[in-house]
Image (tube, rainbow, N blue to C red; front, top):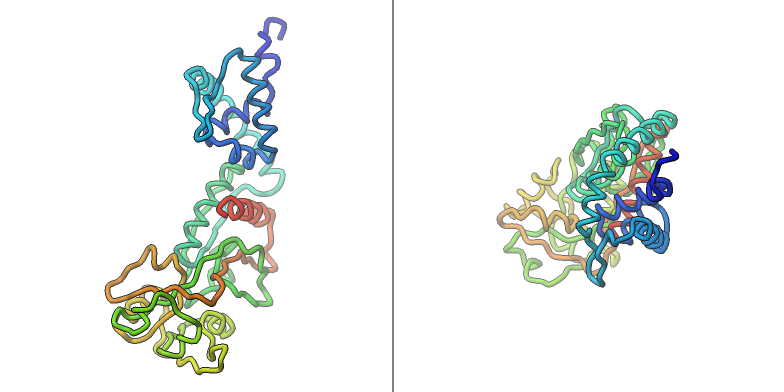
Length: 307
């Protein structure tokens, strides 16, 4: 437009996008990660925009980044239009890629649930035209929601060795702890070993749970060859913890359980000689879609951001 000001003529999408995202994040590193450019590129873009505006838009220090009053005014002016354009572009891209529509994601356990919500926020920012539903699964029916079509993708605890399922990237790792009755001798220790599993009865899992999965969580023999006795069966985590509290056995669980569940009579003791519990993405071999690939990409990005 002939009458446009110099600022109007030179404002480019990267400048507006960098400004709006930095105003949200107030952190150059996270802004660069979201925009998939270098931190230096973001800094240079903002500096160029500030020169063209003629005044600082952000106050920067070694500890924080915040908008100046002029920056807040510019954000109020440009953000609605930016959001409208971004939504339109995302919808067009999603439709072209087949990512629109309804998408059901399952998860096993609290840590996986929190991770799923973070990924969904990232995913729906990128594809606002998609409706993501979330479904909690149980150990007793680990893969049934996936095989029955109730969910398209599952964030679940590994290992997964099923011929009809695809194991995608590992996205979450959680330290292991041992849930023991509060009056058990192990409850007085600062840490436990895998060998200590032979000092109590470990709960078995009821339902359609693969033997290899149970063996991975609690081996039938310790590394030194001691027998690990299987005790009562439990179908859900709350049921397991209730029976631990009642003194009926012990159970390896993730550290997230200790942080979110503290039933009476249960003590959580960290393992000193095991690796973390790993969670990965799983989907039907016959049902891979562009939606799944796009969600998996967002999950990998979220996993990297959480480290």
